[in-house]
Image: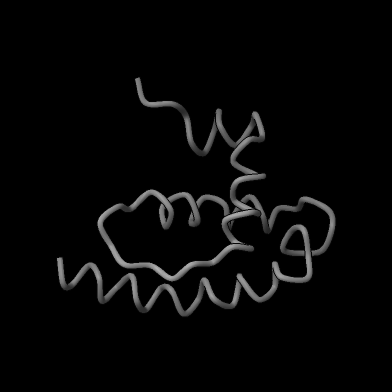
Length: 83
């Protein structure tokens, strides 16, 4: 578990860059949903899906992910419900 936490800490550095971008934009490239949001959304799903680790609070990233995670295509393709 310590190795996984170390990897999560290293990844948190990158997510802080995303957090800063989303502090002034609705989506990664501005106010319009783009392919950048699709690509980063798949990675973010994994980041938010891992439980049991200490992760920094990233409210802008959480807001953004909450918004894209409700898109029907995201649910269908990236995050289908577990059956």
